[in-house]
Image (tube, rainbow, N blue to C red; front, side, top):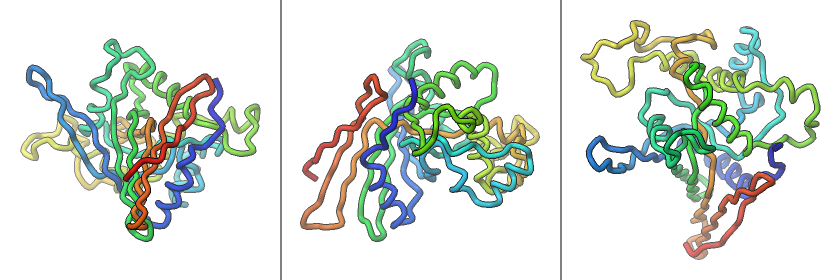
Amino acid sequence: MFPQSAAAPWRALFLSGLEKSSASPFTLSTIAHGTGSPKLAVPRARTVEFRGFFPKPASSLHPSAIDALKAQNIGLNPEVYESDVFSITTDVRMGKVGQIGGSTSDEGGTGDRAGEEAVEAVFWFEKGVKTQWRVRGRGVTIGSAKEEDKERERRVRERIFKRMRLCDGVDKDSKEMKEWEWERQVTTYFASHTPAMRGSYKNPTPGTPRSQTPSNPEWRLNQKVEDLRDPVARENFRVLLILPDEVERLDLSNPEDVRRTNWAFVEDGDGGKWQETELWP
């Protein structure tokens, strides 16, 4: 199946509010599971940085990132795809990664939703907008090069691809289409960080006691990474994506007429469509 062609009806509104407010951080909530019996579901929330809709286009990169990709003979993916899939970057050792991949309804981990878990994202656009956005969906990660993750990575990429579409004017049989690569796209996200931020993926395991000696002697604070293929940093680096199933906008800009709109994604043979419903606030 080829990617769907229609952009989500809420996309332009969201991007407009993001641009006006300049508020890219948002709250991401996941579900952790305790070790007791029965295993209790426990909510977890943290502030993360929105990295744009997948795949991150070259036009959004800092010139230094583009220079690094070219200088290291990695290059840039052609801008042939876009989507309404939210992206962030994370360390695979962070708790949220295990929480989205460690407990699914797919017991054997072999179905379409293997390695996924429910997440919720909340954006608050204050400056000039006064609008809250709530995104509910499924979280997935890509970027592992481990052999044992190869099949999971393939399944996750297939599911993401179903939510992607061609950019306007792109010919599906063009040379550019054939040049697009998943690995290069993950590296593009890595390149979009500063050398110091890339170095954070070589920190000791987040959340472990400082008194504990890191299991890898190359894990130290305050490192800078120029090499976009650095094996230690890249082993820990992941792109975390939210496949939205439901998006809700609460517009508080007019206190006398607060508006609340819900869009629900319904999958079908053509990929899926969004159903819009006006709600009481």
